[in-house]
Every structure is written in C-alpha cells, then in structure tokens.
Image (tube, rainbow, N blue to C red; front, side, top):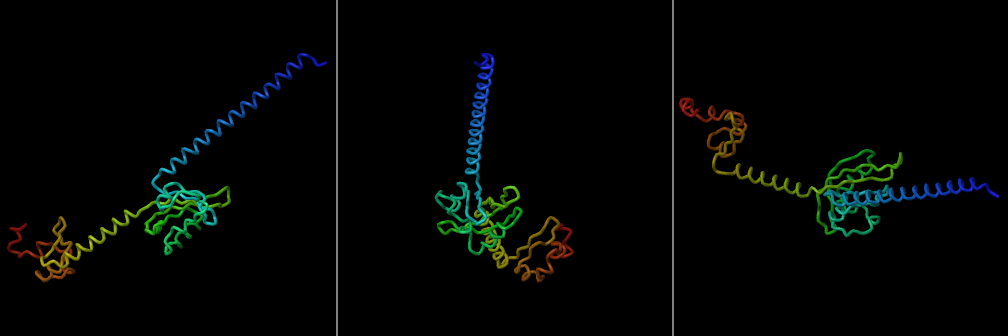
Length: 220
C-alpha cells in the first residue's frame, strides 16, 4: 500500500502540472489573439494608406499587395501570386525596375506605370530589400501616384511657353524690372522701339538706359 501522505502530495503535484499547462495554453491563446488582432490592425493600416505597398519574391512574383495597388492599376483583388509588377511598368521603363529590384540597399526612382485599361501613370517608387537573416528573400516597394503632379508641371511649362511666345511676339515693348530698376526682361518689340538688343539691355538700369539725362531727376 502507498503512504496516504505521498498519494496526496503526488495528486497535488499532478494537479499543479495540469493547472500550469492550462495557464500556458491560455497565455499562448491570448498571445495568438493579440498577434492576430495586431496583424488585422496592420493590414487595415496598410490597405488604407494612399501609397501602394508591394512585396515581390526573387523571381519577381508578387507575394503581397495592398488594396491601393489593385486600385492604382485598375485590378480586381484576387491572388497576388499570379501577378508580376513588371507587367504593369511601361516597357521603356522596365530597366529602371530591374535596377531598383537588384539593389542591395533602398533605391528611389520614378517610372511610368500602365493600368489594366491602358492608361499611363507617372509613379514614384521606393524599393528596399527584404531579408530573412542574412539571406535576401525579396523586395518591398512603396509606390506613389504622381500623375497629377506631373500633369500640373506639364501644364505649367506649356503656359510659360505660351506666355513667352506672346511676350516675344507682341507689338508693344515689354520690359520687366526688379526693385532696383534693373532690366530683367526685354522683348523683341523693345529692341525694335529702343534700338538695344536684349543682350545689351538686360541688367542695365532702366532710368539710365531709357531716360534722357536732363529729365532723370524729374523721373527719379
């Protein structure tokens, strides 16, 4: 027969082991729930940022893409494993993507993207290598749509060109001065009227160049 005290102590010991295992399981489950909730919060954050976030394997296949990526390129969310980022880069700009993806350090560059409907986008990308320990396992890209900015810059250049054309061809003299009355702009009509070329007039004092000496005190 067993000693009753020994049996009681053994029972208590087994009970403590069971309780400890239960506590560990509860803690592990709580940790799993915390990680799952954190993963959901992170995914929600990534899906709602304005930039596209894409992860590629070493073969160029997309292993992760947020909602903004699919929206940017006019794609329906499906299985990103079937997609290759290079398929949505303008053919003339694909060498830039290969250069960025081949970098061992973060790289930034601009390129043209092509939506599924054929529309061309102007994009800005930041590419960083993804490592698992010392091993390179892929690349992560953050892509921003700068099409509106590029279009605004183009419209501004066209406007400046039109204004320059109008100023250079207008029949009236157009002279622009700084705060010290030095000539900054001098069009062709000013040359025709006053006789000085733009090269001769630019940087000169307006009063000294165009005003007779006897009336300068009155003008000044």
